[in-house]
Amino acid sequence: MRYVAAGDFEKSINLPQGQDEVGVLARTFSKMTSQIKSQMAVIENEHKMIQQEKDKSEKLLLNILPSAIAARLKQQETLIADKFENATVLFCDIVGFTTLSAAISPDEVVQTLNLIFTSFDALTTNYGLEKIKTIGDAYMVVGGVPNPCDNHAERIAQTALEMLKSVESLAKKIGQPLSIRVGIHSGEVIAGVIGTTKIAYDLWGDTVNTASRMESHGVPGKIHCSEETYQLLKAKFQLELRGNIEIKGKGNMRTYFLIQHN
Image (cartoon, rainbow, N blue to C red; front, side, top):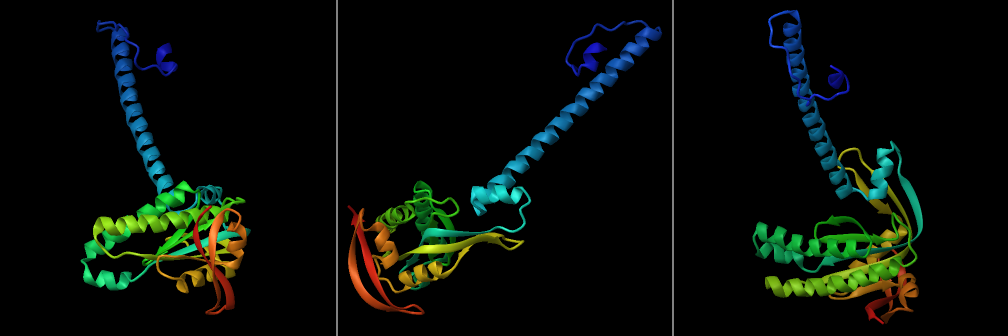
């Protein structure tokens, strides 16, 4: 009995075989311990299943939100809104994809986008950046958020250069005329979590709008940068002056094309 009291239900016990009171009591006790052992096995299995579901939920949450933000939500933080004074935002758009998608099957559309964005995801992870979202055939990523770093612009620049190479390689692989237009701008952003269903970690501010304008006013196969980003990159990267151009909603801006790392 002391083994059972200690939680050991595996111990083998020689039970009295007689029909007297001691024997009946011993067999009743043995049956009871067997039932307890069986019930404990059921409980242990349920605990394992609960843990597996918890792990799945954790993995899903980390696919939606940055790990640092997910941790804050788990701590019951109800409002997540942060200002980052130094960040670099990149927008990338697949040139002519609407026309291409009309000429190929729906399966091919999804497969092509998946190939491109999966390669971008790998670059984003490799350079410690944060993918914000995809919007149709556009891809948005930020450096310096939610984990601040001094070389956010350099990480974005290197990612952009490798994005061009990746798309060029994929175009040859699938036999389709693919090219991208990339825009980059650096500055202050607001970042936070919005929504209660399909929650999202997103960015707001003039820096985001300007980065988007750099992309939309860019050139296929090139990386279009603002003056602010140029100042952060000029020591380590080769950039070519595009000149002063009129940017919708921004007026006249001096912009550059990122060419390569020095």
